[in-house]
Image (cartoon, rainbow, N blue to C red; front, top):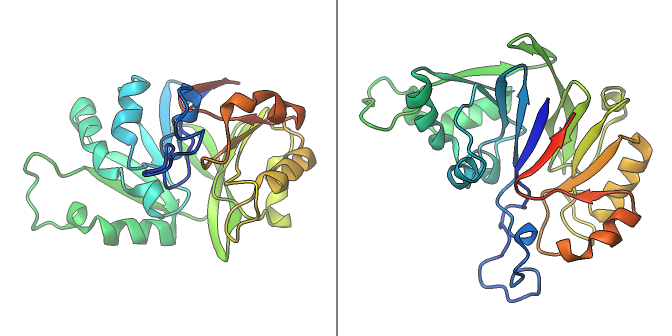
Length: 253
């Protein structure tokens, strides 16, 4: 099983438009971040987590040539607005792609991308072929157990996911006690950490570090990063027993 971090940035991306800070002007490729997503390769299947607006360039940069399914964390723009990029995978695979997410997430996707499900809209050259599946609990995908994990994103309940000994919790501001049973014995945990100052809907750095120390995965990696985080300061993060995820990072399990 391999996980590739396709994107590691918060909704603005990094560099941020119009910003002249050291991180945004950095020449370090690990400070060039596209919007958050990940690809899980397991049992010969490619499972994509979210479809951010940057999916096109992420797929090219990481030579992604197949997407067997998509699982969605929630329906905010930076996590769904690349859905139309699935069209090319329909062409390559000659068939529809199943997508999975919470009922509210799927309903929102259907409302925003209503043309996909509108029978009066012709296929033309660009209508994605999607089969949508609302989920409420653990489900089986190609014989692989997928465990949704309810987490807080401010007042909203969204999903993180556990696949085998890997868990992915982006846009997280709190982990309910009822969800912690799914986070034991992890080889790797990817957890959102927006910035150093507290934020109402995301963990800040110290909160994310505290959660990783509590959960004790084999590796703790931070994603959904703003331009507050400088990859040049790697030793600082390693001293807190966490790593900054970066675009193109591969995690072998």
